[in-house]
Length: 207
Length: 87
Image (cartoon, rainbow over all chains, first blue to last red):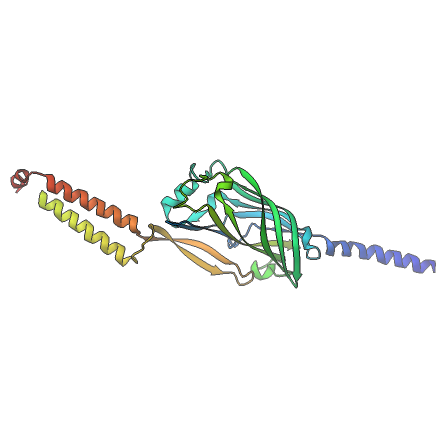
């Protein structure tokens, strides 16, 4: 009887680390070696439309597939990576009158809470609330989010590596006026509404 | 001299219009790059890259027409006498 209890305790001790390992969140790195991650922005004003994208994305997200509502993380976008096809527009966009990328080099979103979390297979949808920093101003915003967990798929994307992938997609609207970017000015040419579409993949490498 | 300026104005107008039209007649601003979208089969993300390309827009056409108008205007205000001397 005593031997059985000791054996059971030993088995339990051996199983605990494995159970913990499975339940612990994984840290996904969003610095994409393939350069595919991007954020698309669209501003549709009555006289002009400004469309472009940014690919200078980095940051980490801690995601637990068993408990997606506990997801935390920070995503950074290098302001200098914002690109439009017209060189003069790009110069203005980066310049001191608009984004002032020399003074404010980072655009950052820090997730604070997840609500309406629904998981179906590997896909989780949620409404994330967090701190969005742009042009030196931080505002609390909420955005719908889709998280796609791809266990064991890192090797398909980066040969020779093992691990998991997490794809984050989101679409939301910001107002440039809320971030003191030429508030109330030039709205006939540069819309106050900035439509953002985010599609990024992070990797959690495993040995 | 007057004739040279008129010819330059006409050549600039026709040349710029042809360049603009053959480059696609872009009604927006001049673009110096093309957007190339490529689907990542694993994540389903459409990656965006930019490749250098020149697509003159209405600003290019407008600048050429303004230049042509300035050349023609200079030609118009030049006295006939000076053009005779040159000939």
